Image (cartoon, rainbow, N blue to C red):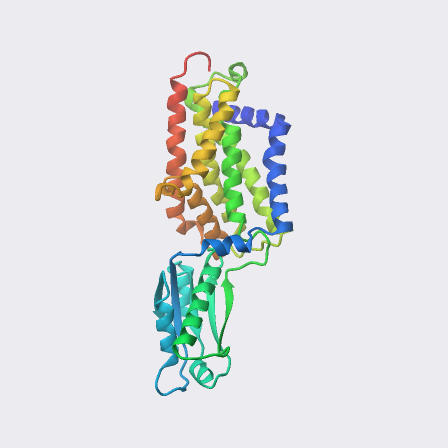
Length: 367
């Protein structure tokens, strides 16, 4: 009863702060709407990121036609594609096998050489090479397009084709025709983490112990647990807005279970709240609480990105949250198969949860 009374008190305190509620509900919705109206990612920026990146691709050769007797042109083209810089090429016997590999993200996409390729090329007729890229990896399509286009150029030079004998067309697998398709997993993860940190860093330092004493005598563990529970509940309400708003208003009709996508967001919320509560136990003033929020924000989004120190991002929860929400929403993976993405977030949040309790237990004075 003491615990539930404390949770109720925390929620009532948050609900009374209309400015904080506006920040965590209105601003994320406005940002999502802005992405929906303007588009999410610039094409030139993406093109600049593909240079030098590794491309794990698959290829399926369905060509049985006959053309130039000196060569098997489809196999020659595959050989040239495999020789492109940073390309790792895997052969598949059927399109189904390639699709399975793409689903499990062993490759970023696959090329299909259709029947009639050699006959058309030998007769200087248009021949098309199709490739299918994973839309969940934002660089997959431009990266594969660059590699296939370069292979076509090298192939034409090697075999003295001077006309437009070979062209390619592409299809993005798992693509949803929504302007926030690419940005949504990142936006929901960043928003929940940032808002949880922002609110929770004020949860202890800005608290009034007299209010707790007037409700019921409480233990320190109950106080910390109530704060983590109350702020996580609030973050789950915010998550519901961030899931439902683009789904209903911005045509993000993802095939996955909407309830599972919402439940999965509880883990990143728990991480942000636990980390924020711990930092709040260290602060002695509200200003210090705000400074700790900036410190936590920089640690999560700079060090946790893996840009400066490779592998460090595996410690932080943001990557697991983004990848997990993609798989659940866009590939219909159930929560039962998401443990590899769940336990790192649980571990991260629990470390700070325990650290918050220890730090709070060592505090002197009224609680």
